[in-house]
Amino acid sequence: MVRRLPVKRLSAGPVETRCRCGAADNPGPMKLLLVEDNPAMQTTLQRSFERRGMQVVLCGDGARALDRWRASVPDVVLLDLSLPGLDGLSVLAQARAEGLATPVLILTARGTVGDRILGLNTGADDYLPKPFDLDELEARVRALVRRRGSGAAPTEFDSFCGLRADADSGAVYHQGQPMELSTREAALLRALLVKPGHAVAKERLFELVFPGEADVQTEAIEVVVYRLRKKLAGTGASLVTLRGLGYLLKADPA
Image (cartoon, rainbow, N blue to C red; front, side):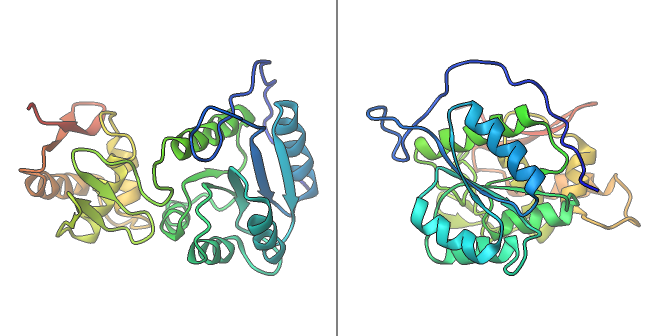
């Protein structure tokens, strides 16, 4: 039995397009490579994006996905993980090894924190578990294209106060130098670097820092916060606690 997608009616409007180099001249339709083996899902997503003026290249297995990726040079790849033959993570790892830098958004029913971290560490730029809302998917695709157009590296989070987290290795750098962080400290900092200046709930951070550790209390995140806060001293960034909201990164006053 095929699970139905919760589909919202997409509002009409102009399609924002941008060439891969970020230039405004000669913009063309946004090109998506959709790697998905479920025919119903393929049809739903293809119709949704083509209705918005985007070009969609379909592929149902991993080996062909790599060939299509090399040949079509898409703006964004929508990649399912459960594929016949070569699975999605193997496709992603091979593509990154070949230097294919197209932004990748993983679409999968594997929605655990561990799966998300594995996908991001393999080289994905975003992750959306099934079932999902089509409007949210479209917004995420456009965000990836905007980031790509601005020249941001596809395998790194944006830099903040000289801090940068590499999504391939998981390492965190300050001014180009690797920081000496524990695995949990690095996981916490990576989560906060995704959106500096915005609070992330304690519960959400706990899931990312202590994935699958049911015997650990939520308050354990406070210990990691304390240690990371000390290691951020002198970087120009501070880890701030917002009562009832969570934690965020803030730039120190000049």
